[in-house]
Structure formats: C-alpha cells, structure tokens
Length: 263
Image (cartoon, rainbow, N blue to C red; front, top):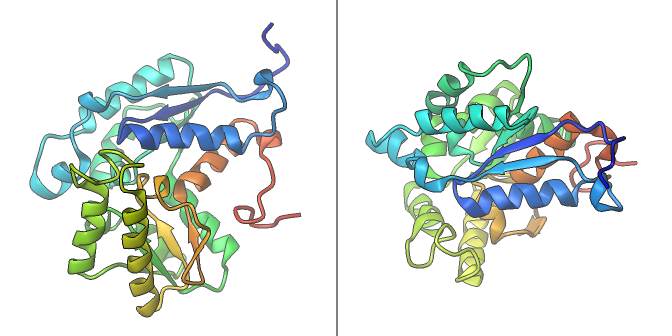
C-alpha cells in the first residue's frame, strides 16, 4: 500500500548524458535519503534518452548538432510526468548556450531547477570558507565555456585546470571508445583512477587546495574522498543532496564530508 502521508515533492532527473551518470545521480539520491522502507523514499523520475541528445562537447567546440531542442523536450516531458524539482546529470549541459534557452521554456515558479555548478560553488564556499584555489577535472568543453570559473570567481575562488597535454589525457579517460568511462565505467577502472590521480597531483602542484570532479562520469571510477592529501568533491553528490533538500529536507541524512555544518 502506498504511503499517503509522504508529502515529498517529486524529483526529476534528465539523464542520458551519459546513461551511467543519470543512474549514479538517482542512486546517490536514494543513498542520501533517510528511509527505512520503500515508502519512505522520495518519488523520483529518471528520463534517460541518450540517442535523442547530441553530444554537448561536439556542439560547444565543433559546431555540432545542438542538444537544446532534445533537452528542452525532455525537460518539458518530465515536468508533465510530475517532476517538481529537476536536475540535469551533466556538467557540460549547464553551459549557458545550452542551459539558458532550455530554462527559458520552463516555468521556474512551478518547477525548481537545481543547478549542479551553482550548488557546488555554494557548498565549497561554506565548507571551505578560506579556500582560494580549487582544481577542476572535467571535459574540455566545460573548461572552455567557463561554467565553473564564472560561479567560483564570484566567490573569490580561482579554478585551476590541467595544461593542454594533461587535459587531453583526462578527456580520453572520459571519451575513449575502447576504454573510456562513457563506454564502460568498470572496464578499465584501475587505469582511469591512476590517470585521474596523476592529474590531481599535477593540479596540487599548481596550487589547488581541493578538487572538483566536474564531469558526471568521473565519480563513477573515482570515489575516494582524499587523493594526494587533497579533498575530492563530487558535484553529483552535492546535486543529489540539494535535490533532496528541495524536495523533502527532513529526509536528508547527515554526512560528515558533505555537510557544511555537521552535527
């Protein structure tokens, strides 16, 4: 029997970019929810239509097909299906040239959108109030469109990124069709972790005081909270907790690592 006393808002996830990232966000919402029974969990809708959405990096860097029409259509469909709080499980899709026209079609007075980069910046500013430099591992498109730089600059935090050679290695770790995370997260997990750990070491050498995994594929292989003595933060985890906070704040479990004022 359905729990009729559950007053939680329904969370919507626009996934498919890539599919594993959408599943990861859904899993982290469940893991961060205080629920002892099925009925205690927050209603959640995941729309994952990867074949409908053109590659975001190809659009931003190579003038490829725009993902805006597909994301807009899926966003409107998930709202019609009942989603009241919505998140997109892709950092690159938060680039203004993609996200802004999508949100123009949404009535944000009725549907709350949880912005993964804005939530990451808000969290870091509270968690590490004295931080001045944070390293970013992400797609090249996310770096070049300056999404993270825009939000963190407002908080007085410099984004430190890999040099071109190292960034090409990070991008291959994400996109390589034979061994990249998008093709099969578990296939070469050890090698992917080794590559990312090396990149973190280089960012530390450039002055980074913490690391952001600014691509939703990266937490699929790197779950450690500290690498080379730097705290490593997962924006997907931050977004999951923000979605819960918007949908049913009383259900958000405590987390020593991801609470800004743990009790």
